[in-house]
Amino acid sequence: MKDFIVEHYNVIKALHVIAIISWMAAQLYLPRLFVYHADADKGSELSETLKIMERKLLRFIMNPAMIAAFIFGGLMIWGNPDLMHQPWMHVKLAAVLLLTAFHGACARWRKAFVADKNTHSAKFYRQINEIPTLLMIIIVIMVIVRPF
Image (tube, rainbow, N blue to C red; front, side, top):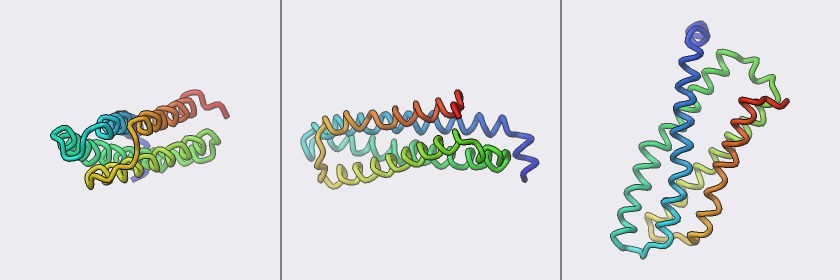
């Protein structure tokens, strides 16, 4: 299996990048939907439409993209275990863990909207929408610049 991974490393890397792009797009868009949802009246047509959009985004794009990113990233590490000896990789993985925690928080916030029990303001969702951007910047700098 490891020989297959090494032989197809660039394909696996490309699939990893595609999964990351999809995951990030969803992580940036879902909180924006929450901004609109927080301002919508409970039970309104807009609120119900946003519930559907949020569910589909989370279940059909965000979750599968995260899983694919983990699988292809794990395969890359398995194919090149020396990556785990690089300090920049540890910073990257810490940022990925924080991004995963943000993903989990988005899933919880979505459940609150489904139950019409959201307690956060649109301003809150506008502010937290910056978190995945900051984590993405850290991850990209670690992977491309490899500062240490």
